[in-house]
Length: 189
Image (tube, rainbow, N blue to C red):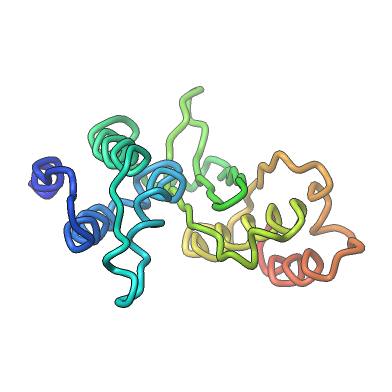
């Protein structure tokens, strides 16, 4: 019923309508893979201050993002599964220039079962960080966001950034990465 209401929302023409759409779909963000990346064009025009609200512009990138988000809430894998306590947990994280994301999942009978999706836009300052720091930040944000699933359990972190492979075993030459590593020591990675 909620999804049907979201699907009935027409393409926004005002800032208020765009904010209403983002507000309606935001609850589903943990079910949508790469939500922050998909929603980025819309969020770029909805984050206007009161003085700039007349600069609202709904263009092709926003229209495409609107359509992609509507498609995402009606396609697989919208439904998440509960974790199996006897199967290892896997956390895959990734970073782009402007957002981070991760998925917590398990491989059960050679089938991937998604448990939790997380993504968020990076603040402008963090977008300038080196890749190693952004990748470490993605792990940190995902682990802390999913801590209810991860505390007290052994899990595997998958990252495409090889220098982070042993970040929990030995110090790096990077203070930010080392601070993140210290926080993550409370988990059984």
